[in-house]
Amino acid sequence: MQKKIEIIEQSLLFKGLQASMVERVAELAREKSFARAESIFFEGDEATGFYLVAEGQVKIFKMSLDGREQILHVFGRGEPFGEVPVFHGQPFPANAMAMTSTRLLFFPRKEFVALVTSTPTLALSMLAMLSLRLRRFASQIESLSLKEVPGRLAAHLLYLAEEQGRTDQVTLEIPKGQLASLLGTSPETLSRIFSRMKEEGLIQVQGKTIILCNYEELAQR
Image (cartoon, rainbow, N blue to C red; front, side, top):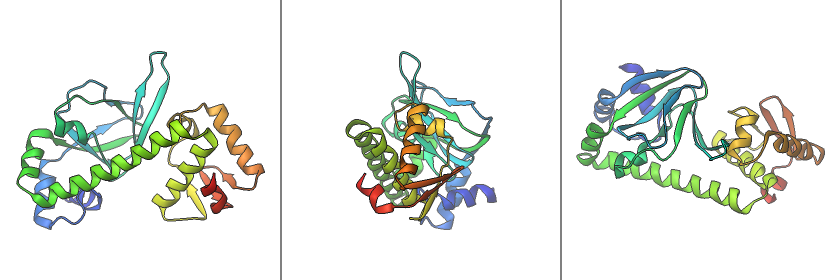
């Protein structure tokens, strides 16, 4: 129970809730474990509840008719996913899969909606999180539709810098093949762009660590 409370307290979704309310939220949570590459739900499945990542990483993605994967988002510790369908009553609009060995907290729809309805503070936290999620997806749509791949990569590196609170370097949290899918390109193209940015003195690549040699120029890109 204590571990569930710690994870919930650290999540942006529940940040600021009183201890008594955190305990009520934790009582609803059910722990679920998934192996690497194991599906959590499929597009079209009934949204019986939503999830919070306790450990590991989860990717949300869609598949094209020709079998190509487009990653929509990657979620890590403390981040919720699948919460939007819970409130509008529709099926999940995309697939979810564990990228690593993953432990999740599952919140059943009926019980959680009842708790939100009776708790204005929790409702406001949900609204803030959904607003943030909408802003992220708007930025991703803008990148995919209006920017060339180098601009998408630059924008993603700046996003990571903001998330990680640094301007000198960032750590890639997913493999480069998955990053290519997230940016809507191929691994080969992404590799060429990384090499070009290195030649231009914008970045240095040290495994998963990307040194941001010229933050201002990346912002212009």
